Length: 132
Image (tube, rainbow, N blue to C red):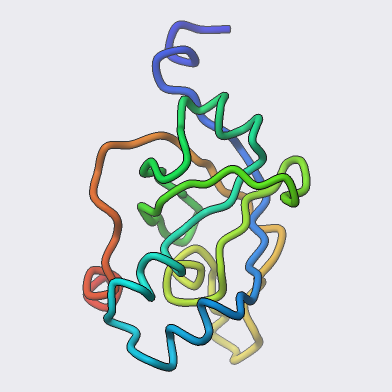
């Protein structure tokens, strides 16, 4: 293992985009509210991945895919399948998936993502709307 792996650990995982009742309710109330941000701008990881990345529940994590990246809060969850990262359906998840130009639906599961620890601020909905 290289020194960089200890200093900057990362997890290469497969994305699962999942519906969440709480996130859906908050999105109907106000997509620009802090309650919606708290529920939608998250990634759920196995507790082992959370620990391996040097994260504690609520720490910021950078989730990168070929089509984009987001900074969200990370949480450990016993229900996350090994090798996976779960992001609730919404603007943050959609920033990680490619939308085909032919109008076909985007691939919402199995997208390769890399998760790393960061001290950067959570990506706001306004930031997502401004990005190309």
